Image (cartoon, rainbow, N blue to C red; front, side, top):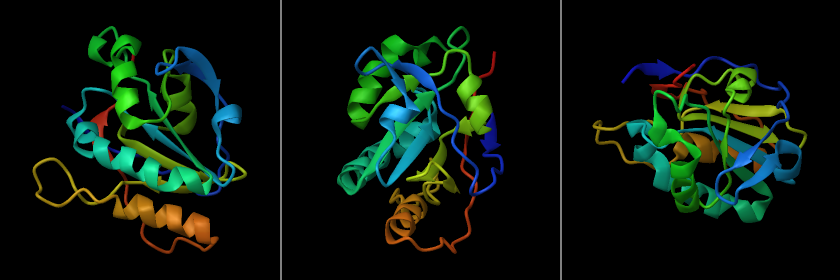
Length: 182
């Protein structure tokens, strides 16, 4: 497992539109149709990464807690399925159903590159105008460090977005497995 930290992305930068296969329902999905009225969370994840598995339940809980507040949630897997077939669409469906929100397959890896995503999980939060308001970790918990998974950093960013106030907390990079590039 290659441990990687998320790259720095400028707060305020615009989200790039995309159209990808939603493995949960088998339909094409675009950011322009999935975006939330008040904000959009985009999570670059994959099925096999121990860092993603460690936080999967909290990602699903956050979506439950904030979806009724006009925030939409989208997961994207950009891993090379030739080297990591367990991250392919046929396996993503069940994982996505557990998350409870769209889980899209970035077969060409163009979306991950457009977003400068480099690890799983790599977490982004955009405002209603699809301007980046947060890019960083879920919380300080990692597999094996015995800290609780509570989503504190990402929840704080959601609360700041909802309350229309600046997020003055340090945005720590996410840490996880590298995206498996072609």
